[in-house]
Figure 1 (cartoon, rainbow, N blue to C red):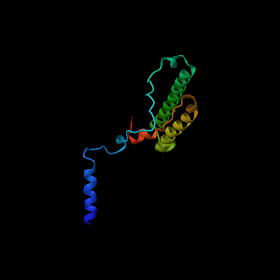
Figure 2 (figure 1 turned 180 degrees about the vertical axis):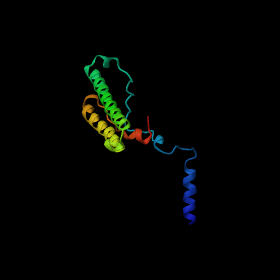
Figure 3 (figure 1 turned 45 degrees about the vertical axis):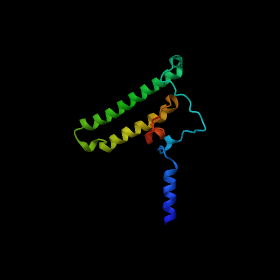
Figure 4 (figure 1 turned 90 degrees about the vertical axis):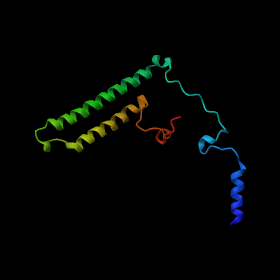
Length: 125
């Protein structure tokens, strides 16, 4: 056991300065990170795909709110709760509209509801 303790003391004294732990300690990268993309490019305003994506997002948001609010209003305004879709129907209306509208507009606007793994993990840089 004494030999192991000597190795530990030797290892602890090998580096006198404190070194960071984790991925930030890896400074010798074998690649160069690209510069950050600009937040706004003026050239986007002259492209049709920019306006097409905006129109698709507007229509999808309008349809989502219209169908969802009408479903809730139908449940609230009904004299008997047995004749309505109920709470589960409201949930199906919300979920179904999100599914259908994302499926229809994802190819146009490029929007998805899934975040990149680094954003989920909390590494925003």
